[in-house]
Length: 277
Image (cartoon, rainbow, N blue to C red; front, top):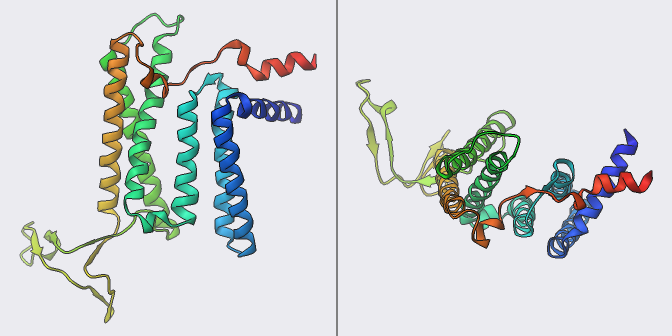
């Protein structure tokens, strides 16, 4: 078991250095995360230390996938994944970009929808081009599956956020300040008629003003906004993917986001095994 883990570790090291562009981004971001981790340790902010450690682990995931599953991630896709992880965990959480820049979360969810559709597209496309499988899927079907895959990932993530907020007291589903509400709960006749309250400027709880200038929507609007922009990102890539297959793989843009089968010459696990024989 230890021997296999060592071989995997060596293969991942080879993998991280295989492409110069992604290697530069990887080592630069890793250095920044380590520096931030040291600062968080000095400040005794151990929750952020954990986030830094998690980020370092997530940085290895693309290389691990390539080594373990013999799949080649295009350099553009790999760099975007690394930047996405850094933007979400380090900038978003530790540097509070989610609070400082409210649009930050929207941007990341849009990118997530796009990337998840690319991954779903590649999974189906790899199966569609497998010589062992005796059927061919239409470009439209592959595009629809890619879109549905991305939306499923988005829904699962929102369920995760809801679970963290409900059971662990987090606030992953950020609140939204609104000034108008419509609710059938306020209908005194219990006739399922929505009662509208407009111009809400303050909310008082237990005799104390919240001081936020309106009513707090605790997560619903944030969740729906995330799913809508995920939809947009997924739809955009699905259209590109459809055109890509329709044109029989022509065009460099989509190729930069679609993983494909790895060349046997880049199977680092097998190469290490041969070296040790």
